[in-house]
Every structure is written in C-alpha cells, then in structure tokens.
Amino acid sequence: MRLSSKQATLLVLAVLILVSPAFFPSNYYYRVGAMVFVNAIAVVGIAILTGYAGQISLGHAGFVGIGGYACALMPLHFGVPPLLAVVLGATLSGVIAWLVGRPILRLKGYYLAVASLGFGVLVAMVLANEGQVTGGPDGIKVPDPGARAWLTGLGLELSNAQFWYVFTGLFLLAGAWLALNLNDSATGRALRALHGSEVAARTVGVDVARAKLMAFVISAVYASVAGSLLALQNRLITPDVAGYMHSIELVTMAVLGGAGSVLGAILGAALLTLLPQVLTVLQDYEHVVLGLVMMAVMIFLPAGLLPSAQRFMRGRGE
Image 1 (cartoon, rainbow, N blue to C red):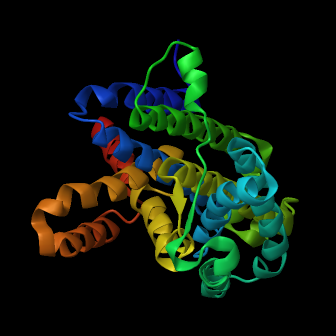
Image 2: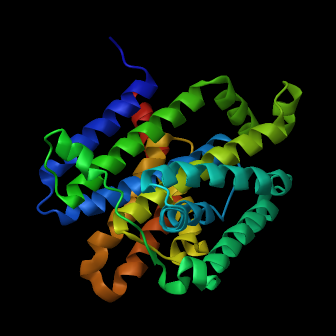
C-alpha cells in the first residue's frame, strides 16, 4: 500500500523521534532534542502563516512569551494547574492574535512585517518592565507540572531530560498532524490560493481577510504552546523569549528549511538549534560560520533546504 504524502511525513517524523536516542551519548542530548521539538512547534506555526498563507510576522515571539508566562503566572496568582495553563495560554494568545490581526493584516509586505514586529517588541517590554507581576528582566520561576507522575504510574521510569524529550516529541507529532490536515483541507487550499495571489483568491470566492486572520490565529496558538512547553521544561521564563531576535530566529528557521513544507520547517528548526551546539568548538568564530551557512543556503537554495533537495531528486529521477 502506497503511503500518502501526509502519512509519509508523519512516519518519517515519528521514526526520527524514536530512533534518535539510540545515538545520544548522554542525557544532555535528550534536552537538546526537546529544544529542537519546542522550536519546531513554533516554526510549524510560522509555516502555516508564511508558507501556506504567504504572510510575514516578525513578532511571533510575543506569543511564545504569552504562552510561557501563562504557565508561570496562572498557577501563581490563580491556582491554575500548569498543564491547564498551557491550554488557557494558547486560548489567550488566540484571542490576542484575533484582536491584533484584524487591523495589522490589512497591511502588506514590509508594512505588515514592521507592524507585527512592533507587537512583539511591545509584549517583550511589558514582560520586562512589569517586574511586580512578571519578575522583570530576571524572569520568574515556573512550577513543576507533575506530568512525569503519569508515566511513572504506567511503569515508565524516565529521567527528567528523557521525559521532556518524549513529552515535547508527542506535542510536535500532534502539531505536525494538525498542520498537514489543514494543508489538505478546503481551508488549506484557500490559504495556498491566497499565497499565490490575493486578487485571484478573491476572484474564486476566498474570503481573504478571514483566511489571513485564521492563519495568524492558528500560528499564534502554535507559538504559545511552544512557549508553554519551554517554560515548563526550564522551570523558568524570562522576557528574552518574547524578544525580536527570537522572532527573527523563528522566521529564519522556517525559511531555512522550507516554509512551504511542514517537514521542511521542522528541518530548519532542527538545523538552527543544533548548529550552535556543533559550532561551539570554533569558539570566537561560531557566529561567523553560522552566518555564512545561513547566507549560503539563502543564496544557493532560496526555496529552503528540503524543497531544494526534493527538486534535485526529482530532476535526477527524470
């Protein structure tokens, strides 16, 4: 039986998550793997907004910050269980994205990019300056979610790093499945039509404003969940996660791997998360080499790593 593209993507992702620990020499690599998964969740959201709908946001780290701080502040001030705070933080991010997206998504091109960047900067400033609530620049501690007890009850004894590898990996699989289903749906086709041409999409009956807003809200929810998982894993959250440099990193990850592909977005997140770990041996030249690698990919493989590789393989097969 031949697998569909969606099934093949999920199978490849599941196999990579399951097989990778066989090559981990220590628990530290489980933590790095979990960081890859967390970043990938946010980048899949960017892929929906940019790769599917063709809209640019340079402020999505703001939603990462909202999700992360929800897991710190809701348990502290309202007694909400940390895992429920993930859901509430995602809901709050979706509502804010709907409110913010309605005016700014009327803009196009670099006007939209700058407006979204302003939103991210505003969130980061609030988190840094409202020290009595958020802990200020030093951040705030996040309570233990107690989720490991579930696996212990099932007879699975995992270290803390191993647990977060499994937990975030499951979230990534779920996020990829939802994104792939969206791509195959009527809504996904509308978003791709919007990406190609707003005028053409409107001509065939696509509600352009509604489609843009939907993509923005969905991508914000992905970013919020990623921020919540990051906060719960690190047991600490700081305003840096909402900073504009983090937004730039997320967009770069999506473009590097191929924003039009879920697997490409995950590849970009993995590459840009792992490269700094590998390049530490270069010490002072680490950022120079990282920048050169990114420039080379953008110059010679402008569609992204995965789409370019797929195009090359198809060319070889003809």
